[in-house]
Amino acid sequence: MKKILTLLGTFFMGMLLLPTYVWAAESHASAVQVPVWLCIPFAGLLLCIAVMPLLRAEWWEAHQPLVVFMWIILLVVPFAIVYGAGDTFETVLECIVNDYLTFIVLLFGLFCVSGNITVGGDFAGSPRVNACLLALGTLLSSCIGTTGASMLMVRPVIKMNSWRKRKRHIMVFFIFLISNMGGCLTPIGDPPLLMGFMRGVPFFWSMHLLPILIFNLVILLFVFYHLDKKAYRKDIAEGRKPDISRPGTEFYIEGLHNIIFLIMIVGAVILSGVLPGMSAFQDAAGNVRGIHLYGEVTLTLPALIEIVIILLAAFLSFKTTDSSIRTKNHFTWGAIKEVAVLFIGIFITMQPALMLLKSVGPNLGISEPYQMFWATGALSSFLDNTPTYLVFLTTAGTLGLTGGITTALGQIPVNLLEAISCGAVFMGANTYIGNAPNFMVKAISDENGVNMPSFFGYILWSLAFLVPVFILDMLVFFL
Image (tube, rainbow, N blue to C red):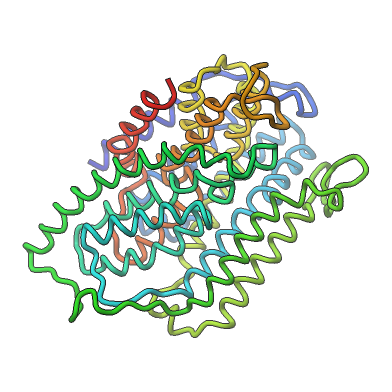
């Protein structure tokens, strides 16, 4: 089975490299061609993430930083040959400062604060309880973000199901719903929608997606409930029982004051989207003020304020919470370290792929809602869904269509905006790297004894359960 998954993965990554080359975006300093072979380090890193845990798990765990550094070097050196050392340094610095830094600080803050909240009591992970938890977390994702809801809910869900043997499906559907789909209703829910809000999409417009979310939620919870009921009965038949004395009679939350720090973090994210549009944070030319670092790279004041607030929230959370709560949560730094190492490599090595996407996006001839849905979603499964969303949002704005939502990018019909938004948010669930919390949930689950699917194994789960739902979405909402 492992050999089959490895072969499938190799074939799929090879398909990414089929084109010979395309033109770079006009905004680049020189109109040189972007050879597709510059995407090889990105594909190579993804293959390592997918294959190495299957072939050499212990070696991979010990040498992840070295492998990531190798792929970064294999990108940076040829990139410098093609574009020059100055442009290469600026590209990497821009990626680290304006993409990776805010990403990892947000993830770190939520990881710390959620680790200081523990839920206990006489609740066992039954199919009904698990379905209710997934539904609650899905709706919570639009209030505190998919990352916030994932970090808040992951440990209670794991703890309530710790007595069970068959539980990987619980965390897979957790990623499907809480870590992705639930974030579609507000700009707080997922970064792509925040970018849309910053470009003129009304804050509460995303509530248009509620019928689609409910449609998907009902289908996936129905499937999940029956999968979980089957697994639950097998666990009971083997003599497994939850370690509780009076089921359903006790429930408690410790570290509840950390909700204040979660609100601080959510507020920081909202500020990062609102402050750049205020005149006090703009210079005479309309550019966002900040600390100039190199070339056109600037650490903006809104981003700096966001980082400071998030780090302060994490610091106060640790200072005001007893360490016994972290002990009950089996809190360690392993998961955040793994995510930090892998994603610095992913963010840097995917830059040529993003350049290709920005270059060819407006010329793909994509103008129908179902085309926007699949194109945005397919690329968001492997690339950062925020720039992917912006590429297709810009494409929709340049079609010259009338009616719909007036944005800074032009008039965008409602059905196109719905398709782009759903593609970016929903299909981030297709792979572990499609959205920030996916890999974090996997890492925390692995740490706590849940035998999660491999990289390709997870893709098989998404092909089996998500893609049919997306086909229904297309037929019902986007045709």
